[in-house]
Length: 371
Ligand code: MG
Image 1 (cartoon, rainbow, N blue to C red):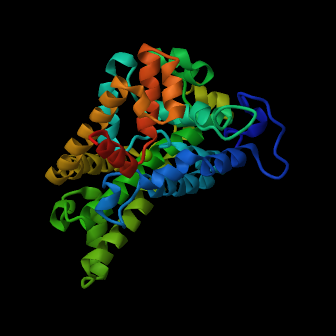
Image 2 (tube, rainbow, N blue to C red; image 1 turned 45 degrees about the horizontal axis):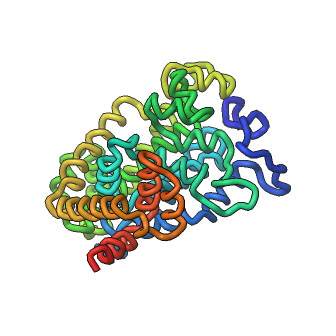
Image 3 (spheres, helix red, strand yellow; image 1 turned 60 degrees about the horizontal axis):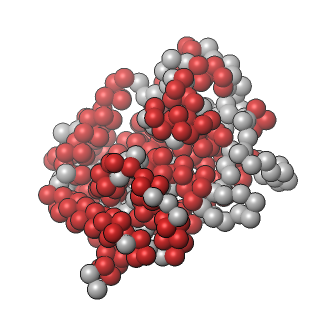
């Protein structure tokens, strides 16, 4: 590994001291704890873009997290950075996501407006720091500082003040590790590409529309020139495979250049840099952003998706109102905790309960409200 990679021997460690693992590295242990967590298993029934029951082949938040990790690890290995740390951050980045994707997150945030709001990335940290109850000696998963720091991609100044060590960099305007920076971009690369596949599969995006996107068009032209008779399904797969390759290769090369130009030799110098050092080149980044805007407009806001969004909003809102009106409608472990609290703290327990729900659990819980 390079001298500026995150290194467990220089780590700020765990919140609760533990003996070192005998046969694994500290960040491998973090990754293993994340995979064994309850929140991780729930991701299989949480929406990425399509609600779980809409089809068996669409990405779920679990397969999304695996694809993010795959991209992140490739980049980390190519740049001789810390692969297990990158993997751990990628796998954990969405642990705090609500049911029903962004519709769920936005609605819960609106419900929590007077109580400090709701942000899924802050919630991911809350899951690994507090909500997972598995270990006898400590709350949460007791992960390494660098893993926790990487999970917290962004955060308001007010929240940063309350978070202690992992919040500091937002107040001091410092960068996180290169591994955290990779995980952040790997997330965007993964969804930009897999959402093209899912959107096309669902019939919400057409080849003609996609060909207006430079990133897609460039690969389309190449594949079509070599394989003019390829059926659409295989054509799309081949294009997406090449789009990921193009963007990831560019990211590795550009980041290598930026690291060299900045002349960093340690993780502290990475943290002190004015800007993140993990970046695509400006030209490829522009194409990546264009595709992202296109998906935003034509897939995430597609009329068929908006219908699901409205239903998800109603479910989350009505669940929040019902539990706020009568906390005993929640299971005892949440109801008991809520009973000992008031105001914003009580609302947070309700948000924790709803955020932890899978799509189908939320639908069933909502149906049981009217009984
Ligand atoms: Mg994600």
